Every structure is written in structure tokens, then in C-alpha cells.
Length: 396
Image 1 (cartoon, rainbow, N blue to C red):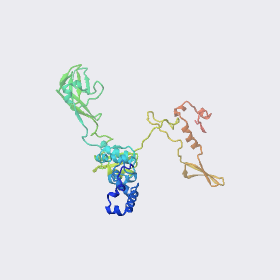
Image 2: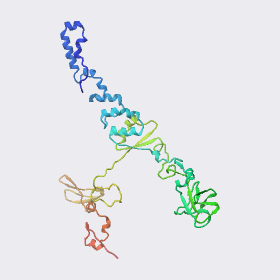
Image 3: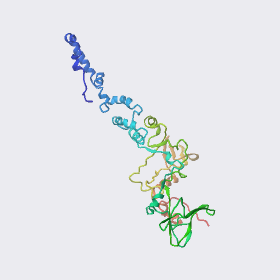
Image 4: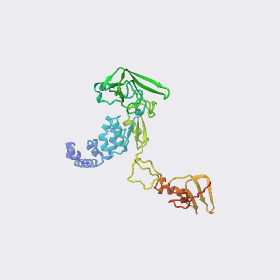
């Protein structure tokens, strides 16, 4: 800390009485030395003389920074990832933006050096009539060329009824349709909906008051549409349960256990009237390369190769050799390794054909289709690479 604060010892003579200055010079010397001692670093006079500096976050001593924290950041944990001086300069922004997504992100970034993903369960909640309808009827009526017809029928013969599939093979459906014949709007028709008992579906048709001619082009426009599927029944939409799925809940997905931050989050950021849930999110980072040999064949197009470690725990009977060198097997105590005990020394090793084969399959990088051209005779003659001991029995 820079010593740009006031000291009292140089001005002792200005505060003592005249008779003390005249008759007691030793008192003056003693007082000056006492003040010099008290004004040294970390002494009581030092803090009194530099009290203005200790109200400055940039200049306050580290030992007193925690005391300042008790005043301006009582709800904040005593240990956090960000630099304390920088954090306390920005703490007012955290307070003023409390309850917003920005404050939640700042909370985890400053205190835990972690990113957070905010999810609102209401986005996946079924809400009737939640979709947004956009009306396009006026635009189509004003200029049909600005919109695209949903169905187009080119008539091969005269008829007064439009039904079935259009030129593109799509079955007719409608909801308040706008109909144009040869680019002229027609309203002299009746929309008919009937139940098809064979297909158990609705059949739609348009019956005109006057018959249409061969080669007429009938274009059917929609009067509007929903911009999203919100409000429609779906297997991805959830019913409100007034707990997780409600309008006033949100989920915080971070890499930190919720038990470590939930108390501080409640005091600092969490808005009243809401309920939050914590989830641990695992971030998988793909390394520069993967092992040349991978177990099995993964589905093509996966962004990250799945590599399973070569060691695999197997449930098998174990063989244990006692000091008397007798061997015995046990199927009641299933373990995944072999214990060999000699002279009170325990060793663990993987042995056996099954374990050898499990390790071997991780060393073979070709797909199973590579064995497609081999025959039973190749297996008997052991001509197959990585062939293991096997017996082939042929029967009629």
C-alpha cells in the first residue's frame, strides 16, 4: 500500500499546551516515538490514518478485504472463483439484475467459474390454444401471386366436384379454403366433409354450383396457419403438475452439484415466487483422435466416437490356489479376477479363455462382415486371423 496518508507524529507540537512544550521536552519526544510506533504497518494508528484507503476496494489490504465483504456482500460465499476486487466492483450489477437470465449466468461464472444452461419446463408443457395463428386470407385476396396454393387440380374433364388427390398426389384437406379457378376467385361452392367408414378418416370435397370445364386449373389456398405446433397434442408435451411443469419453474444445468450453490443462489439471484431445480450437466469433449481399434462398429454419422476401455469386468467363477497348491472353483462367490496366494502375498491377474477373448476383441478393428468369406473348413484348419480354440461338429 502506498503511504499517501496523514501521520500525526510530525504535528505533536501543534496540539500540546505551551507549558508542556516549555517545561517537559521528554514528553514531546515520548509522544512522537509512541505515535511513530502506532503508525507503523498493521498498528492501530496506521489504520486510523489510512481509513479512507480501506474503504477503497482497489487499495484495501487483503487481510481487511473479508471485512469489507461482510458489509457489501454478506450473502456471497467466502470463497469463489473470480478475483475478489473485480467481483465486488461488479456486485452492484448482480444485485440490480437479480432474477434475470443474465444475473444467473454471472452468478455461476463469477462464483464457480462454470457455465449454466437455463431451461424452462413450461416450453414443453401442453397449453390448450397456445399456438399462434397467422391469417393470410387478406394477402391472398389482394394478390394471389404472393402466396403459394396448398392444392392444385388440373381438370381432365368437366365436373362440378373437386376431391381426392391433387396434381402432386396430396389428398384434399382444408379449413376455410380460398378457391381460385383459372386465377379468378370463386365462392359459389359448398365444402363437404364426410366420414369414410373404410379408412376411418374424413374425406373432403368441394361441390360447385356450376360445373367446371376440362383443362380448368383449380387452386386452393389456406386462410392462415399456425407458426408452431404449440397447443397441439403431442407425445413430447407434458401436462402441468404445478411443480416441475408449471409456468413459474426453471432448471439450472451446470457442472457443479446443486448442494454447493443452492443456498447462495437463493439469497443472491433466485426471484421470489419461482421454484428452481438443479441438474448436473456433463460436457463431453472429443479428443484429437480416437484409438485405431474400437469395440464393435458404431452407427455412421455419430459426431463423437464412442471408445470403451479395453478392460471389461466379467462375472465368472474364480480359481484360487491355496498354499497346499490344491485348486478349487467356486460358483457361489462371483468375482471378476483370479486370486493366487503364496506365502501370504496376494496377486491379481486376469486369466482364462473368456478374459483373453474379451481383451482380444478390442484389438481387432475390422467389422464382423470381414469374416463373411470364410468357411467351416477354414475354421477347422485355423486359417482365420485371431482364431481361438474351437471345435466344429457336423451332423446330418
